[in-house]
Amino acid sequence: MQTTPPTEVTIPPSESLIEYPSDFPIKIMGPTHVDFAPTMLELVILHDPTFHVGRMEERPSGKGNYTGLTVTVRAISREQLDALYMALSGHPMVKIVM
Image 1 (cartoon, rainbow, N blue to C red):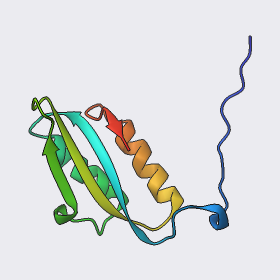
Image 2 (image 1 turned 180 degrees about the vertical axis):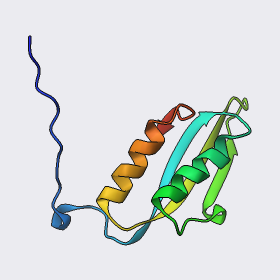
Image 3 (image 1 turned 180 degrees about the horizontal axis):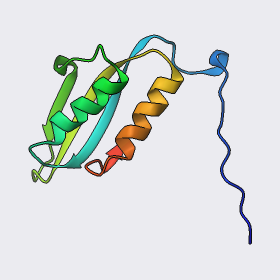
Image 4 (image 1 turned 30 degrees about the horizontal axis):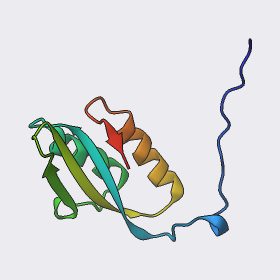
């Protein structure tokens, strides 16, 4: 059985729910590790060079097994956000990105 690959969905700028440029919060969760926040910071800066650590909030889970980060990036395009989400989601330290 042959399956067709998923097609890329293109949303016209006029139909986007996000107005660019804008500040856009992204939540990242992963297992607690000393390098989690610094590694995520490096990834975010690759996609938003204006990002600084003051725009990152870090919270441990109730039992301390996981760390949650909220990074507020300066979103300038849908492509930028898509690339950042893909980079974060594909990183082995990341469990979920919202």
